[in-house]
Amino acid sequence: MPPMLLACFGPALMASPLALDSDLARMEPAFLSASFLDTRIRSRTHVTSRNLIVTEPLGSDWLLNSTVDLKAAGQLTENVGLTGTIPFGFLGREGQNVEPFFGNLKFGVETGWLFDLEQITQPDRPVSQIGLGFSVDAYFPTSTDCLDQPFCQALTIAQNFHPFEPELYVQNAMLFRTRLHGDFRYDVVQGEVEVALSPGFAFDLPEDGAVLLVSWAARLSTQPIPELELYSEVASSFTVVSPEVFYSDVDSPAMLTLAARLHLPKFSFDPALFTSIDLDDATVLVGLDLAGLIRNRPSRRARRAMDDMDF
Image (cartoon, helix red, strand yellow):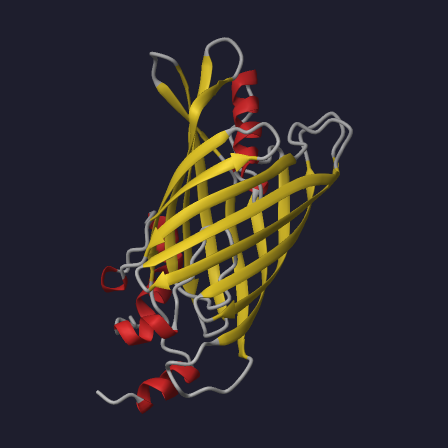
């Protein structure tokens, strides 16, 4: 974990005990996404890379290869956590050195609540839960300056790599994202939806002015066995308000992601392999999310059920 994020979130990451019991794992599926808000407010880290199968030309012989997001979230209380992201990417010419470019640093606060739809104490009965979440994120304008056209185009393409969080690569703007989240879980299946509004202010342009981005996303996941999660996600975003000249007008096409994630709670290691398909021009990305999840203390329902088990 980067030192800055470790300093911010390290104490919270160490504070949450692990829940390693296999029976408990079946009762508390570890539904986990690098993009969606976690209503369980668990401490977690992500190193997420997104890569084009066929690199796209960026004028002359410039090629964009990949982006990488370093993310961390730390649980402060049962319902409140802190989040942070360091985004960057790589731009290179064929046969020459690869040059990095940087996105916008993000820091935020997330809150979440879980509600059991019925009070069940038998561990073999399906669980029905509703989760509600809310977050506020600030994106600081630290992205690489557009001193030449290839870097401008690289940042724009990086926005399309992140259809639900293009704010990470928007240029010349300070943005604040407000996100609403809802999820419904039945047994080992969970559906999630999110919407986000990102107002902000653009600067260092011929005409400064207000910016407003809108994003939406949906997710469906299942965990047929405690060690495996299969999921799909779809997301898109677009600009509602911007100055007349704005280098980062966002119009991210809907992107569908199909993925599989392993859950290895004894090692706090939850890696995922995914592919994302641009539903507009059929561009295909492949990616890897090296995640680490610190399991929370069991829910009240799970603790009651565990107490009733006959060991």
